[in-house]
Amino acid sequence: MAKMSPGRQENQYRNKVMLAPMVRVGTLPSRLLALDYGADLVYTEEIIDRKILLCQKYENVILGTTDYTMSDGTVVFRTCQREKSKLIFQIGTCDAKRALAAAKKIQHLVAGVDVNMGCPKEFSIKGGMGAALLTQHEKVKNILTTLVSELDVPVTCKIRVLPSVQDTVELAKLIESTGVSAIGVHGRTKSERSQDPNRDDYIRAVAEAVRVPVIANGGSKDIKHMLDVEKFKERTGASSVMLARSAMWNSSVFRKEGPLPTLEVLKSYLRYAFFYDNNEMNTKYSVLQILHDKMTEIPEAEQSLSAKSLQDLANIWGMQEEYAHVLEKRQEKEKHLADLAGG
Ligand code: FNR
Image (cartoon, rainbow, N blue to C red):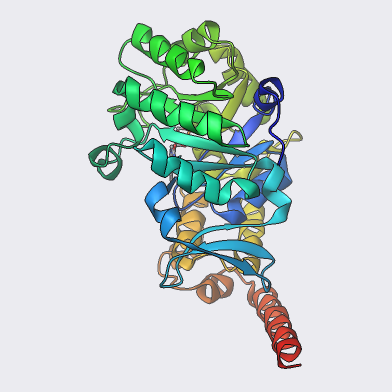
C-alpha cells in the first residue's frame, strides 16, 4: 500500500464529523449506523496493543467480516470492507514497539491509527497508558514518531487537556512535531468528569497554536443536531468534531436533515447487531444507553435490563421475525459452505 502524502493524510481529518472511540459501544454495528447517518469517520473502541497481539485473524465468511479473536473465541475486533476507508483504529499503549507491532497487524483494514492519550480509568493509568501519557513527553514522542515513520496509514492521537492552557498547548506542539495527521482534544482534564464543563477555550488555544487539524471533543451535552456541531466548532475554532455520548444516545445526530426518533434508531442499531452477531452484553449496554432518559417511560426499556441474549432483545423489541430471518440466512450459508467443503 503506497503511503499518502502528509497533506492528504491531514485532509482525511479536516472538516469532518466523527464517531468518537467508545469502549463497548464502538463496535461494528454502531460504526455502520453512524456511517449510514452521515458520520465522515468512525473510531473503534480502544483496543489494547497486547490484546490485539494475542489475537488470531479470521476471515468470517458467514458474516462477511474480518475478525480478530482470542483463543477462547472472544471477538476483540470485527470489521468489514464497507467501513475500511472510514475506520480509525484506536490503540491503547505505553510502548512504541508493541504499539507498532499491534498497528501493523491491522493497518491494512483501516484508514488510520489513533493513540489513546486520554483515558483516565485506573486500568489505563496503572498500565502507563491513556492519560498517564499526557505528562510523559519522551514516551509520547517515541510512540508517535515510531508509528508515523513505520505505518502506511495516518497516525493521530486523542488527548485530554492539562490543568494549564500553556501546558496543553506545549503538549499539542510536541505532538504535532512527531508528524501526526491530526490531534483530537477532549476539553476536560484527567480528573474532570462529564458533568464538568468542557474547556472549549483550551481547545481553541490548541487549534490556534498548531497547523494540523484539531478535532474538538467533549461537547455532547449541548449537541443534539448537526447545527449544534457547527456551534461547537465555532466555539473551539477546531477543524473537526468528534461525538461520543450524543452519538451513543442517538446516532442519527449525524444526519444533516436532523435526528430521527430514538426508537427508530434503536431498531436500526439492533438490526446491525443481529446481522453481525454483536456481543450480547455490548449490545444490551448500547441499547440501555440509547434509552438512558426513557427508562421509566417505555416498558421495553425496563425489560431490556434483564435481557441476556440477542434473542431476548429481539423478543422485547418485537423483532423476532427479523432475527429469525437473519439466523435462517446464516444457517443456509453455513450449510452451503459445508457442502462445498465436503465436495
Ligand atoms: C468513552 N471515551 C473513550 N475515549 C477514548 O479515547 N477511548 C475509548 O475507548 C473511550 N471509551 C468510552 C466509552 C464510553 C461509553 C464513553 C461515554 C466515553 C471518551 C469519549 O471518546 C469522549 O472523549 C468523551 O465522552 C467526551 O466526548 P462527548 O461524550 O462529550 O462527545
